[in-house]
Amino acid sequence: MSSDKLDRAVADARMARDQREKGYREQSLKMYPWVCGRCAREFNRQNLQQLTVHHRDHNHD
Image (tube, rainbow, N blue to C red):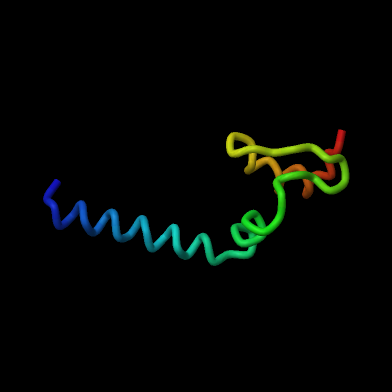
């Protein structure tokens, strides 16, 4: 892989990350603790994607 292609791939990845960080979910995760307000379940980096599913499914057991 040439350095131009590599530079372009890195630039594309950074732009995608920047776009993702502008979204509501990413901003919310930066502002609020990773804890369910209803059942007090804590989330970490390994299971953070479950936070959204946890709330949508109302799985607070």
